[in-house]
Every structure is written in C-alpha cells, then in structure tokens.
Length: 307
Ligand SMILES: Nc1ncnc2c1ncn2[C@@H]1O[C@H](COP(=O)(O)OP(=O)(O)OP(=O)(O)O)[C@@H](O)[C@H]1O
Image (cartoon, rainbow, N blue to C red; front, side):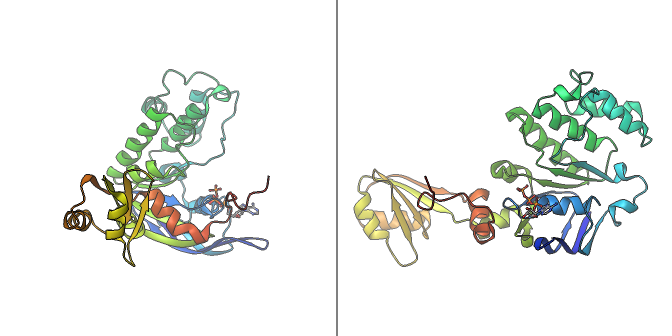
C-alpha cells in the first residue's frame, strides 16, 4: 500500500508536485498517468526517499521508505535511469544485490528465469539492448519478493512479446495481493493492464478512479454510420447536443446519439444504412480530454508552428 498525503515538492519557483493525496491499494494494478512534466517521476522519487518532500508525507506499507529495515522485501523498483554497472554480467549484478540484502542465489536464478534472461544473464549488462535492460531492471525489482512494486515506464524498449509479458506479469503480481504502481505513456497498453488510475497534471491530482469508470465518464462514445445518403442523414440527425462529422465519402461519425436513435432516424427517413457501429471511447481520448488544461509542454499546432 502506498499512501501520499498532501505530498508537495518545490524546485525553486517550480511547484513540481502540489498537495497530492492518494492511496495505491494492493490487489490491483494502478496506472500512474500524466502529461510530460506532470510530476510523476518526482512523486515516485519521493515515495522511494530519493527526493525529500517540501511538504506532506508518503509511506509505503505503512512507513516512509527509508524506515524499512529490509527495503528490497517491501518495495521493488524500476526507475527510468539504468543503474547497472556496464562491465558486470546481469547475473553478477543480481547476485551482488542479493548478497548484500540477504537474498539467496536460488532466488537470483528464479528471477532470471522469470524475466526470460536465462540465456543472456552471463553477458555484460552494458551490451544489453533497451528491452533486455528493462527485463534486467524488472528482475532487480522482483529480487526481494516485494509486497509493493513501483515501475516507471516499464514498457520502454520492449517488443510486442515483451509488452504482453509485462502485462501478464503485472496482473499476476496484483493477483497475488501485491501493490503494483506503474507509469506509462502507452495508453492502449495501460488500458489493457491497469484496473485503477491515478492521473496528475501540473503536479495536482486530477483523477483517482477505476479504469472502466474513467473511460465511461471521461471518454465520449461515438456511433459510426455508413450510408448511401450521408448528406440527408446528417440533416436528419443534427440537433443542438448532437455532433455529426462526415468523411466526405459514405461514413458519418455521430456523437450524442445511441445506435438505436441513429437507426430509427434513418428508418423514419427511408435512408439505407450499410453499417451502424457503437465505438467505445478509448483511454487515450479520455486522457487527452481530461488533461487538456494540464498539459505543460505541448507540440506546436500547424497554425502555431514556425518554419
Ligand atoms: N531536479 C529538478 N530541478 C528542477 N526542476 C525539476 C527537477 N526535477 C523535475 N523538475 C521539474 O518538475 C516538473 C515535474 O517533473 P517530472 O520529471 O516529475 O515529470 P514527469 O511527469 O515524470 O514527466 P515525464 O512524463 O516527462 O517523465 C517538471 O516541470 C520538471 O521540469
């Protein structure tokens, strides 16, 4: 369990984290989302005692991280920066860490196997690809069989198989009753992996809710319609709270109406429909909509871009 109360971090004039209060519970995968610069890494660093809060508190499994006598058994961590000696083999890196924390060699063998590095563990970690480095980082996080796992962008550099593997690994850890807190910019993956979301923007909490609720309340579902007569159907559907966009061909995208309503309106007007599909809102759309006002570093729009 991770509990942040009024957690705040100021760097000079910059309020990187601004009074965050949230609880990350065991048994589910909790996604940690926010636009670039929102304060995710700073929050994770404070959870791990790597940065001191300017105000507020944060505990892991009931205590500040630094007060745990066997931290590797409490919290497994993957941060974005690699912290492996490049000349050392992956196996020796894990073994050294295990030895200094009273963890058995058998456990090292287990995690090497579990992350799929058995064939590469004797090679120098400095020569590892980004994806292999991520696997080694995850092995390091799991070494102490921790109750809580905190992973910052664990999918970076992983191929499709690796991404699927992380997804089932995280679900499995949560199913075992562990606390799993994970940040990622890959929204489609997050939608498949996390059951709960904590979303921050400009250092502030902007959502703390279940994934399904987040998408349902924040995302706009639309209806896709293909018809032989898009112009007339558009005229029939238009109303103050309905938006219809036409792709110029046979297809309309309608928001503000259900498939039933669109189907009935078309039937009443004698308009032939070729397709009528409800399209679920995506996490990505819900996230972009929610964080629109909290984006700090925005790509220039075409109109605003300078050549
Ligand atoms: N050591 C530091 N000194 C000064 N400002 C910092 C420092 N670390 C972070 N910041 C600032 O604090 C804010 C939050 O940064 P942070 O890295 O926590 O965001 P983030 O959500 O992890 O971003 P990203 O998604 O880009 O990794 C940013 O504006 C950043 O520039």
